Length: 194
Ligand SMILES: Cc1cc2nc3c(=O)[nH]c(=O)nc-3n(C[C@H](O)[C@H](O)[C@H](O)COP(=O)(O)O)c2cc1C
Image (tube, rainbow, N blue to C red; front, side):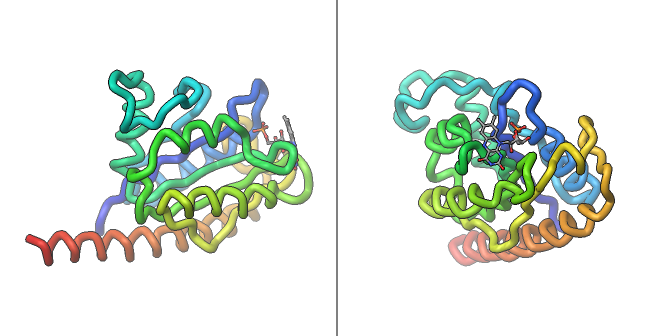
């Protein structure tokens, strides 16, 4: 069975953030499949400077921006975990996304939205789908809204409520379906042009 690289972009850098719990859960869940190399790209740790120019036009890019670009370039698919702030996704996430373009092309993107309220950050879903679609990525139709994140996850990302396991499983099955289909197609293209 093919192995895939699926990094998780964590779009919350807030002090006391809870979206990190969801990112940790997704990381563990992806690793448990035994077929995915993954890491959390924590935008707090990455501390990317405000984007004044895209990575490919920077003559002397900061190492952390280069590293971000390389991780996304290597990826077969991407998971984004984003909180909802005032009905949208955080600026720090858009700042990171805008550094790159070709690195996203034809890559499935699974979007997990997080809220402390009851609507699972669902307003972020369509907005991020639009943005990722504009980069040439392929946002998958499946969604994974997380409501009342503090009641659902412990700080280390373990589940307080096991019912989420099934929802996450269905979401990841969909992500794998697109990842596998697109990866097969890319392989066929390489083969045909060889
Ligand atoms: C500036 C700000 C705005 C927020 N706006 C919303 C919102 O529009 N809708 C919502 O459901 N939750 C909102 N929240 C609550 C977040 O859903 C909550 O903090 C949740 O834990 C996810 O974000 P976190 O990773 O920062 O913890 C907001 C939180 C902050 C800090």
